[in-house]
Image (tube, rainbow, N blue to C red; front, side, top):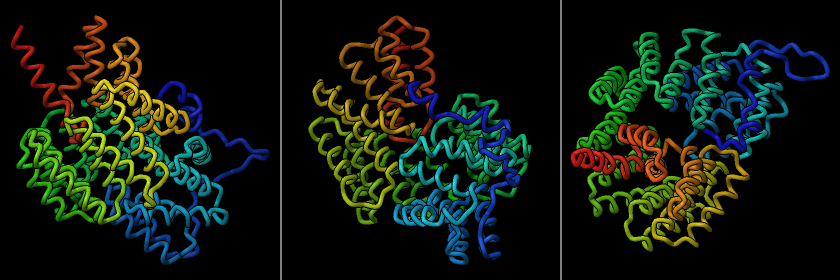
Length: 490
């Protein structure tokens, strides 16, 4: 949940935006039912529609190809440019498309201007105007199911699951069999821990699109989150059979990884790398593969694999992935002084003149500061811990990014625990209660304060966490082993 101090000014939509009320203007304006698409070229318009259908089916590489063709047919196609900026993984292409969309905004419809202000503002970490533009857009076009999906999809990526679910249910009220909205709604239920609802939505989604790979891929991911590994693998393999080029080998690899079948996972990551559509995807999969060595506690191979990821990302000028690899090394390294060196290298990458959106740069900086604060707290280097925490608090005061807010809450909880203040730490850790490190500290804090029922509930959630990321790899397997050992002693 977003920190309460930001809740009121940021989350302005929901009941207002979905009620269908007119935007406040001096004269009543009758907007079209759907967001206009301003282009002088019929070819561009057709390519744009192909792009949006592929986006809804999560075929992002194909969506980008069609959007690029649309802007080639009409170089003044502002809406196509802002969607390239949204979807592109290459930071140079993303930045160029965002600038082009903003430069063309004056020549398109008011609704498209709001769309550009929303998506560009979010990437520039200018959240209040961005979300205000999204709110206005939803009010302006209350019957546009695709626009509601875009908003729900964006909110899901921002980890604002309750708000995303509300918008997505509105999209489904406009089109009950809207596959894209069902996909995202299933994820919001799963993230909230309501797997029965998530499974029902995924069954419906798969029935509506039996020949598309994404319903099976998404269903597989949600089954894995629920700990149903064999069923997850079955869904992923169905996706591969439907379309071997879709990339569901990644889901198979992630599932093997959380199952503890690390060599099988590495084999599948290697296959996923072969089918990856972009250099960014290839290096991301390399990073996922490197984490399997962490799960095996093979320090030598972990460091080598993560070092290779950093080198490959540097050569490809993918600063975010380079910084992330160094940050992961800083999280895994047992020696505090060496960990700090990796974290300093990660920060240095962000200071170099790479083409990065302000949001990406700030969020990765917040993640690094969080690790610096928590590692310092663990090492009882409280001066550095508090200094890094203060930097994070300043960032959280300026940015409405959910990722930055949660980094601050998790770091604040960790520092307070190191200072021997579990009662004060609880409020912060509860805000970040999906992160494995914060969950483990919250379990400790509850036990320290006598809240044993809450501690047991957190322990159960943590032990059942099946997300294939480094935080889970560093915390959950060891936590499960400790719980089994503890249970055996009673």
